Structures are given as C-alpha cells and as structure tokens.
Image 1 (cartoon, one colour):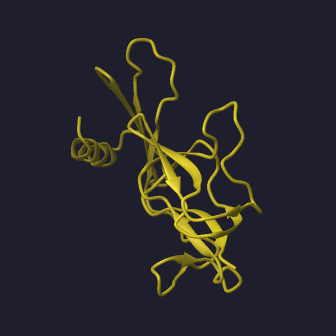
Image 2 (tube, one colour):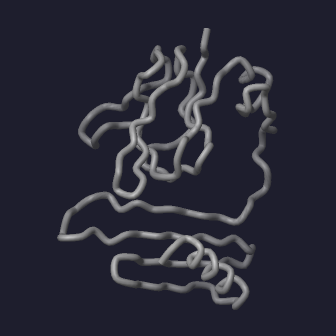
Image 3 (cartoon, helix red, strand yellow):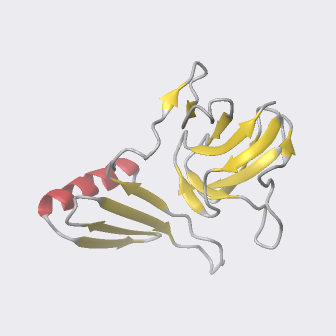
Length: 167
C-alpha cells in the first residue's frame, strides 16, 4: 500500500463518519481514528520479519492545529526562530521524516546535551526511516542551547530539532 492509497483511505474514513478503522495487510497495520473535534490520527506500523525484535517505526499525521503560542518568523536564511531572544540562534532542522533518537543505542548516552560545544560534522542525533538509521550531522559550529524534540518521537521534514548558539 503506498502513501497515496493511505491518504485516500484517510479521506474516505473522515467523510464516512466512522470513529475508528483498522486494516491489516501482510506486513502493514493501519489504524485510523477520528475524533469529534475533526482531528485525524494515523498510525502506520510495519511488522518485523523473521521474529526480529526491533523498534517499530510510527508515523503520525494530524489535522492542522491552532498556531503555536510563540509566533514563528522566518529569517533571511530561511530558518525559523520563535522570538527576539532566540533570533541569535541557528535552528537545526530534520532533513527527513522518521523517528528521532538522541542516543546511538538504548544503553549509551545521548550524542549531545544542552550546553555541549559542537563543530561542523559532529553527529547530533539519528533519525530512523524505513529501518535505516541516518546520522544527522551539524552544519554549524557552536553551543547547543535547546533540544526541541523528545527522544523516540516522530519528526517531519524541516521540523526544528536543535537551537545552536553560533557565538
């Protein structure tokens, strides 16, 4: 089942008025739940093959929500910042959709912590996409000011991950 078919299924379920639909096919399980406030949540899980016990990737897609409490303003570099005090910081964004992990493995420490100095090419995190773990490297040097995403949570393309003070 491809993304287009999943999107069409979501639209169909939303129009039908059903509150929950579950679909299982070979190695894909899809659950679509709709609430009374017209939010949609889609969870797509791929069943591991051969009894391998690995974390199952999850993608969540939600209907547009109210704007965030802090206004986002674009800068000349195309990066978004949340306020005047954050305008001096560089935002490192996700280059792909997947699951964000701060650690290389569950038994090891995080790649970076708030307050750590980083340089260009340092690995900041990994993002799992389609069972592949992609190392996300820094393109700037500076100091980590804030981690914007919780460990093991889904991230979208271009979603802010870290704030870095380049000074």
